[in-house]
Length: 314
Image (cartoon, rainbow, N blue to C red; front, side, top):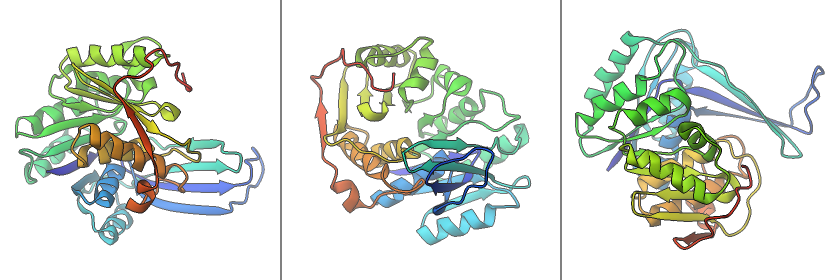
């Protein structure tokens, strides 16, 4: 089974490491990493590292498109580029030595109905039936909040399994479309989706069940230091690393989702996904860990767990 990722708003991610950020002054970086990114692209990179089959479809731009394509070629990741506009956005993550992370994300180029039709045309030339199609990231300026729902309905009509990883109005619209099999919100995004705060594991499960009752089959909810929950209509499984990990969690949720799908979307897949996600946290930028690095992470999986546990990041 292949994982096709769709990234309408990709980015070239620059991670700058420095001792401390002095606002209003000249800062000198001690390390810089540059990586092809955007949530869907990150998922494809993770699936490929895991050994799964993937294809990354993304909207390009005159500036940055060739660089991103070359990087994916070097990594051996199959991809399709839809050329549009002047440039791919550039996002910056500033990491200070005390662990403080500051992100500056550009909005990306504006898209409209014509570009969505080009995406559909490109999708129709790829094998959809029986494969996963993931729509990931915040939508570009100019697109209505139901853009993912429209694209999800299109691939669903061609026999695809559909995953969505976004937030806000576009996540709400996707869920309400009734064609999504899997969503991967973090607990804040899930809280926004159901319209109330979620401070305990029990509250996360209840919120996920509301979403499932609306037509989504599975909710994979990432909870930062509290691990992740895999929730269906009839089960809830909690998984977390045995040892606490520290570092920069940028991209860790994308890796969680990519490995979960590539590994089979079951409890064993959840364990692999947590290990790979945790292994990425100490790495620079949106680096993908190696199988050996992921294999060094021990995880704990429970179906009988403390549902009253208060979330660290609530």
